[in-house]
Image (cartoon, rainbow, N blue to C red; front, side):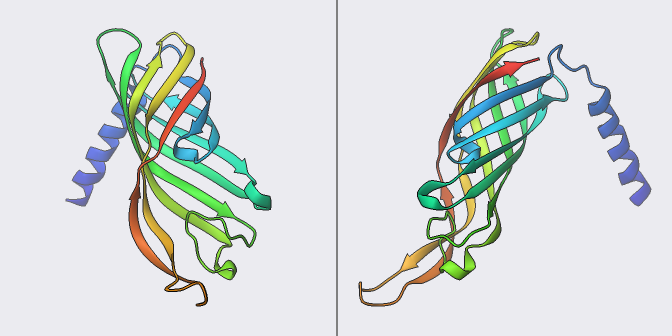
Length: 181
């Protein structure tokens, strides 16, 4: 059974690797809001006409703190006719690196717990304009986050800060513009 599973995986992966890729499979774009939170600079690669992946990075420093985000996603494109308009469905993770103590955080917690790495699940459901021969890329869509968020519990202003972790699904959205090559 194990050798059958390994054999099937090799056949599937080789099909993806040798599938006909578009003439301009690479893209660089800036995303505002979206999977990188405030913004991100992204590299995108189409492995076939409809399947691809992306990785991005952003660095923000609101109110004197620093947050690095790394959105990593796989996506599937569904053509809307024979032109460059497509529906994009993606799934992945946004890695948040918070090297400093800070009170601003998607995962709010006491200051001594805000350092380190956090991971949020993320997705994309949206519209993508990308010609097969390269050029302008435009993306617009909903980019929800899901995972462990913390919220402050404070029965009254005189009580000390306390936090509890809760699983949340947070709707977000974004827009991207870039260049395919």
